[in-house]
Amino acid sequence: MIEDLLIDVDNNLRAALECIDHSAQGIAFVTGSGGRLLGVLTDGDIRRALLRGRTLETPISEVYIRNCASLHISASREKIQASLRGKITCIPLLDDQDRPVDYASNFRHRRIPFAEPYLGGNEFAYVTECLQTNWISSQGTFIGKFEAMFAEKTHTRHAVASSNGTSALHLAMAALGIGPGDEVIVPDLTFAASASSIVHAGATPVLVDVDKQDWNLNLNAVRAAITPRTKAIMVVHLYGQPADMDGILRIAKEHGLFVVEDAAEALGSYYKGAHVGSLGDAAAFSFFGNKLITTGEGGMVTFRDEGLAKRARILRDHGMDPERRYWHVEIGYNYRMTNIQAALGLAQMEKLEVLIERKREIARRYREGLADLPFLTLPSQLDGRENIYWAFSILWNEELAGLSVERAQAKLLNLGIETRPLFLPLHDMPPFKKYAGDRDFSVSTSLSKTGFSLPSFVTLEETEIRHVVGAVKRLCEAKVLLS
Image (cartoon, rainbow, N blue to C red; front, top):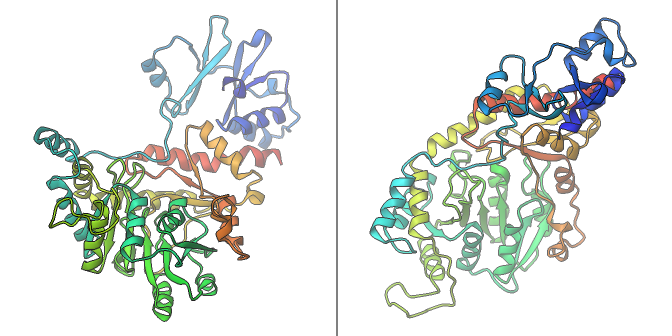
């Protein structure tokens, strides 16, 4: 709001810094009698004044810049954009009495979302083919093509398309025969679908804490949670970071357990040269609109065993015998993907390598720009693990920053940057509390309270990356000058 950027000329530099700190725009508009604009004052102006011997008690009138750029509120978008050049990144918009009633900035015209899809390939052509041929439902050639290409590019043996990522997880459970009386170990820090799919299968999720380095399953916690009823371990490659699959598979082998990989956020991630989802008995992927590739809604479940894949296909289609129409051999589900969705997915998969490289380039740019900030912890880079960085998630040290996580996110939003908090621990939520037992969840609790994710979608422009990096760096500058 414009009110957050206004400071009366009768105030001092301390008040101006507090105004700048609150708005996070790096600038304050100085007003006088009747609310008329007199000039502007930036955090840089204040810093230079302090270096010249002024103090925070110095009146604004002695420091502010009088000859500043401004435009009338009726100025066209083209005129505003032409004015936002060079060092001018934020400009006041005035009414007929020269009073600031709004403002414009380089990034106020386009909020940078947390995620957005990239549909820059054959999507339109393939979907048009579906419409022209009337193959728009759950039958058509694109479904088989999408499944085949997905299996090929993820180095998995069998891929079965489904209606969404959650149904893919449930299909994995059902195909493996996991049901009532069984327990499935699952991380506490994950999206609810990981645990709810276990409940849908009739089994019991057993929540365990995560590791503070990779944010995935803590191996010691997994071992401690195994009982005679344990049937499987569900590992979640959180935010694209591969879990310690050697450790998980070793524990599973020792106890005769299935391993289900929740790879919803990890398409394009590798563990010791193997694509995630190819290491367990089954794996589920999501194609929701914010994922690396999207079909709007949609998912894929992969298997190593051909028999399990065949059973998943039957369960996906109401339990119907594929050789005898309308003859049902099991109680199944309607988890089918449409041909239109598969057409989108095929077009997306055709440019998978380009999307993966762009994701990793964005992560590299963030690392370069944010590496020297003591109040941030960046995602771990671990030997043998290639993170897709579906979300570039950071940990925020409130004590070092002098700013709460919530306030940091609010200030970034004021700058047109949408962020996303980390998942909330499942053990705190009403539907899942009963699955927590008396186990310790200190790591998942701490991560959830101190972390958030920055925009990292593949169409993020270089200027937008620089803006995000600069905004994060500036979050605490005014606070430092005030201290």
